[in-house]
Image 1 (tube, one colour):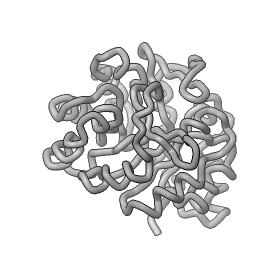
Image 2 (spheres, rainbow, N blue to C red):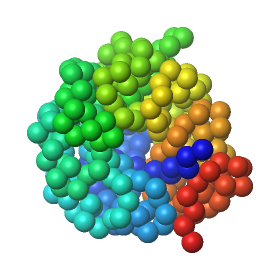
Image 3 (cartoon, rainbow, N blue to C red):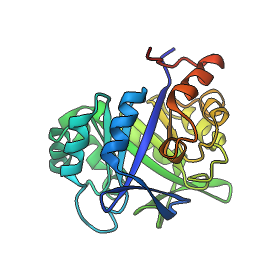
Length: 253
């Protein structure tokens, strides 16, 4: 079995790292470059950078900041936010990103997934899926969680895989920032639907939550923000707890 990955997430607004609850109530969490360096040194497997207001502000992702972070870390780096074309994807990859996270743009124009996969390889294309429970199903939300597309999350996950996405970053909007645990039911439903790797996001509050996301939700990686930003859980401690629970992880000595 492949090692499960631990991925800190930098939500960026106005050049600073922020964190909220259910996509609102943002508070400052520090300098993104300093945090990125810290996580690279502390044994994170990857890093995700999301320019969370780029889409709503109709502007490009902060390329200069992406370049600065990439220059200072040694782990794979995924970038998302406001990306709408293969030209922008190429610019960010040239700036040092290893993968690109796409959300609103691929809902509006799913062909972008295939175009990006054909040009740069599926391994570079991460489909970000922001889902909120609506009745007995989950709907896909875009534009920083402000717009209900009406799309069923399970159906959409299958669609992005079919079109060439190499990975899915699944965020439960209901759990985001609550530290109440991942939505393992949603994770399991999507994991059973697709064959590409699945990153669990939204709800991490304890080591046990991360273990549940992998064991019950069948996630391939767990993403978290505030528990790492504010040092509530150290990455090394989380990995040791996961290892003790028979979850394969990469532990650096």
